[in-house]
Image 1 (cartoon, rainbow over the protein chains, first blue to last red):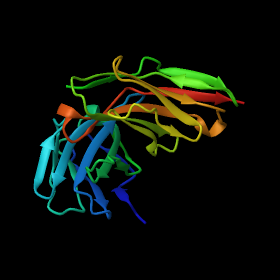
Image 2 (cartoon, rainbow over the protein chains, first blue to last red):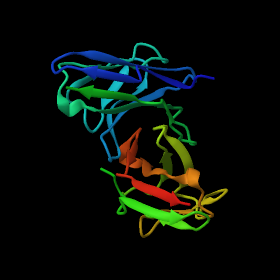
Image 3 (cartoon, one colour):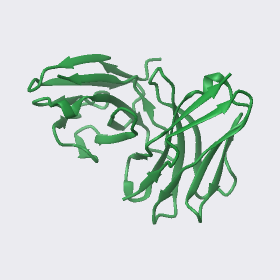
Length: 113
Length: 115
């Protein structure tokens, strides 16, 4: 029973490097989300998707890109990493029904040095 | 846009006692959902309790209960018989209305349960 799986769990990048955070869910959820959590702060939405082929910006999309080619996968791309992108990144999914419950991955700790 | 405010950055409580965490929100919508999430040191986000705005009855889950005051836009979490395992960051979250398809989170309250 995997739920939402994020990889990698930890990563250190140098300024200007690029990387992709992977997220996959096996619950056939239509809705998927990427949040970032800065130290001591709440979660802020980066991007979300309401289904395959459909994505939209959240509160803090600058410096990131996403794609949703399948229901299961929702990768987050960082281009030209900056120290301000040092954060913990969470992927989540939901059915978007009346019982709106988000299922979270275990997070990715990213440091940009 | 909806906003969620948690005015208590940190709180502490003695084991077995009761503690209340505060949350207020701002919305013009009439139908929405409110949540409390717990984030222990393991970093995992765990749903604690959920309240639907159209229900007047306050939600309860074992030792966790809420005081939902719709007119005041207040949604506090009460933890009874606090346990050491309750030590965590607690986030209040709002879903619905013009926030579209995503949760809006508060800044969190760090709760420490002391033995």
